[in-house]
Structures are given as structure tokens and as C-alpha cells.
Picture 1 (cartoon, rainbow, N blue to C red):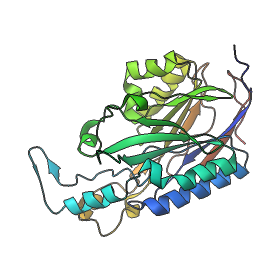
Picture 2: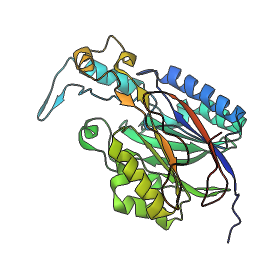
Picture 3: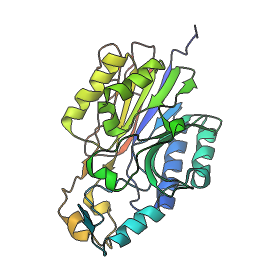
Amino acid sequence: MRNLEKKLRAAIVQASPVMFDKKATLQKVACQIKAAGQQGAQLIVFPESLVPCYPYGLTFGFTVGSRSEAERADWKRYYDQSVVVREDLQDIAAAAQAAGAYVSLGITERDETTYSLYCSNVIFAPDGTLAAHHRKIKLTGAERYIWADSHDPSTYFPIVQTPWGPMGSLICWENYMPLARTALYQKGVSLYLAPNTNDNPEWQDTIKHIAIEGRCYVFNVDQYFTKDMYPADLVESEAVSKLNQGTCRGGSWARVPSCGRPATWSTIRNRGTMPFTSTSRTKMATPS
């Protein structure tokens, strides 16, 4: 039986992307990793598809049975800004190594061979190596217009062995899939990462339940972005204009395994980094 470290200082980064701009968003993420590392964070968790953004509210011209030509320009723009894991994440790996922290980051990934896009989550170890690469297995609703299902078994439920126990991730509505959760439970997950783009109040019930069901710490991290953050020159600017101003309001939490209660505060309608310290497998200290 492993002797686990009893204290973990983690940072949940409720971040905003520079929408449709991979380079600028990655630079921003690297700076946020550095800042969290300077505060002693040993685990730094970012939201789903932060790079280059989650294109909430856009259709890219897709309808059932047809597709408009004009919106293909927005799609091409999003496609070009997607992340090639082997080429684009060197600065993130370096930032993780400099911080000496585990870093979890949600990306829109472009496969080097098939050129399909995937909603993916990568985890870097404190030495800067890529420790886990998970692709969303089954997409939700109209996400299937954008991202492909994962058919690569190497991306199914990877686990990272950490000093605090096994760590893994499920992305957004994958957390509603009982067998997907069970796959992580079977691997003994202690640190359960749930990056998402869902600010619905009922989502908090989901992560609370997972903490109780899985007897694991659950790190739920959401984006914060407003419609003013979308590029003004998108073809679908009219669709953007119809969005609520607070398009994605955040609402990130960490939950403890014994009762699912919050281990840190929730931030709504704001962006920022929420630090907290775990003092044991069953109790967490006040955020600091």
C-alpha cells in the first residue's frame, strides 16, 4: 500500500481565452501557471477547450443536410487555431517544469494524421513531460459538428500516478456517463479533474455526487467569458450579438470526498485563480 502525501496545494484557474487566438491564449496560460507556481501550487487545473476557445453559440453554418458557404471562414479560422499537441505545447511543458507542478489543460486538438479536431485534456507532470492525453469519447449535442469521437484507446481514461494518489479527468458531460466514471473509479482515482464549459446550477449537484460516489476529490473548473470577448469580425457576428452578455459565468469548485461539500469557494461572473490546501484524504483546510 502506498503512503500518500497528506497535503496538496492546488489552483483552479477559472480562465478566459483570447478567443480564436491559440498563440495569445497559450501565452496567457503560461503566465497563469507561473503565477500559480509562485504561490506554491502543486496542481494547476484549467477549463475545457480553453485553447483556442469553446465556440459557444456558433453554428459554423451547419444545419441538418446542408451547410452554408459563408460560415466556413469561421470554421477554417477555428480549425487553424486548434492545437497540435506535439508542436504547440512546449511552452506549457516548460511552464509546468518551472513551476514544479502538475498542469491540466483543456484544448481543441488537431490530429496530425487524420486532421480531425478533438475536445482533449492534457496533463503535464512537474518535470514537463506529457503524462496524460485524454480525448472526449462521446460529444454532446451539436459539439459533434466540431469534434470527432475518440477512437484511440490510448486516450481512454489515462491515469497519472501522483504523490496524492491516481489522477484522471473526464470532460464536461462525460461526467454524466456512469460507466465512464466507473472506469476512473476502477483505477483508484483520488484526484478527479472535471474541466467543463457548463455554468448551470445543476452542474454543482453532479460534481457533489461524484465526490461522494467516487470517494475522491473533484476539481471542477469552468471558463469565464462574455460575448464582448468574441472577435468582432466573425461571419457569425449576428449570432454572437444574440448571446447573453455573461455567456459563460464560471462557477468552479473543488469538492471533498466524504460529503461532497465545497473545499473552496465558487466564483460566478468573474475570472481568477482559486487556491486551496488539502490536509488529508477526508478533510480540506480553509482556502488561502
